[in-house]
Length: 442
Image 1 (cartoon, helix red, strand yellow):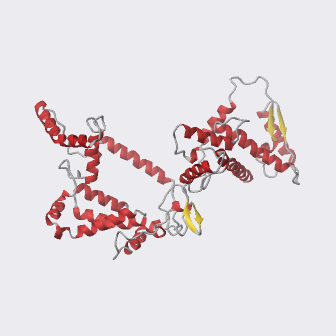
Image 2 (cartoon, rainbow, N blue to C red):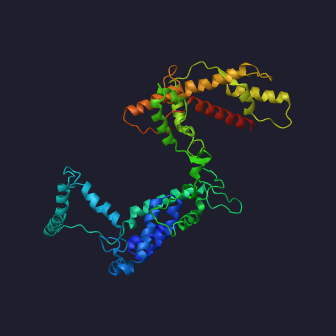
């Protein structure tokens, strides 16, 4: 597919008409497979019309063969551009720059006509002023991509790409692992993903166009290529439905105005497929910003300018046990003396605390766990998002931030910028606690 794009750019830049038609023809399967239905139809009709151009309009065909299907502003080999691109670079640029219609002249029909009809006269006056002053604008034959600055930028971009691919090598042994995966997120595609056969999928779609009226044909979404993005989906009446978290969030908040008396009640729910503040759209957890978290924790705790004169250390006995390795064949007395010497050498005045836990579960275990989760939500997470401690819950803070963004005119609130719900924060704390427990066990 990349080769087709390079081929098309070459055809436009050099004015190669046969290569232009060949590139459009090779694009058709990819346009159909990706769901660009209007492009597929118009390109299909365009190719059919151009096939008989030499018979219907031989003079136009001869002009196109000579490279006149593109527009040139210079005689350089690589200077051809498409007509729509020329309109953007020249006409629209002159409309929106100094002296254009958008700079106080107005956009009425008479003003547009006056501006367009006066452009040739302005060009002649400009050329006459250049001839009189002996100062003109000229460009060299050297392409701008050959300059030292551009070559340096290209080198830096290549190094960035190589650094990225060094730890995410896509060229693994196909005999070892033949699965299709995303080298950035590591998501492995299931058997339904066929985006790697996009050309084959698009060709089968184009076969259905043969012998049919192009205006009456309807493309079926289920026949398009399935990408990794379709993995995040739900089912509606047995049919897979892809979830757009941002669109779902906007619809839920809009519909809530006519259903709930207090719209803040709905912010205890995620309003999207996955918790967007914690998870990506792929379903994977977001990468932690440890530096931001550490900076916030230091600001929250605060540092004292001077250390206290009298210091007493309290050591966790469970952590102390894992701190020192035990020598093979050592006795209990030797191991105990090793810990005593370690504490005496590193801490002047210390107390070692060992917490005892009964082997049989008690009724307080569940309440303690709930207290820890609630404290993590109400104190740490609320403070992390700038909430008011002892006043706001995480759901209330979520609604307040949403309302403040809407009040300033930002109606398209990005759902991932809001704090997580209380349930999402609780699950996140449990996941982090479980991860730490597994690491300690290992």
